Image (tube, rainbow, N blue to C red):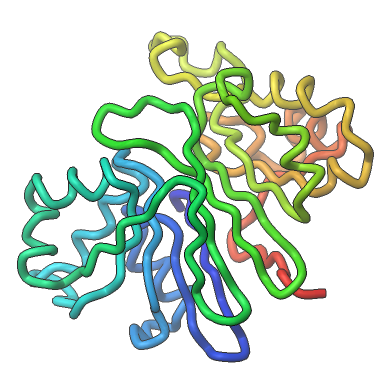
Length: 249
């Protein structure tokens, strides 16, 4: 399925979802058991179709939800309010937009918080953010899309070191993966580039890194492929469906 991340507080039985993907119905079933009362909000990263178009399932023609909190950045907010069918979700109050600010923490409850941060990406319709999720005593970084690590004004090595988990863009393995496309038009850090970028990290820091957002052409999706073995040999992992990252020790 298309990449998304669920946030669960087992104490309060509350859940939040990062990304509203085309696989939203199935991901909601996994996250909440189709008990929509458990869903307390949806966080969006940007306006590329794999990351927000699942919002259609909240509309009058499907779930007809009532004021589901949708957290989005200023340009993303404007895009949703100004373009159908998303504007209808706002007008009919299927969703209630909660506008975020860069590096401004959103407190979910006494145990959990989420902080958006802008990353460089192809921003045709909106800005793009990653998220830092803080639990009771552990933290996780979620960056499904970024153009190249070198384009960012933050040091990804320092970010990995300062957090307990890092779920990072692993869209393509190398630049030969889509021979019919100009890869410069869809820039992402190739996995071979990221492995080189992160090779100076300690073994412990490398184990924090789980690559996500792998394109269906990426050979690292295949168990025991040469590329998968290369990743694991270098100390890295590919995140798996329903994998759990504990934010309290």
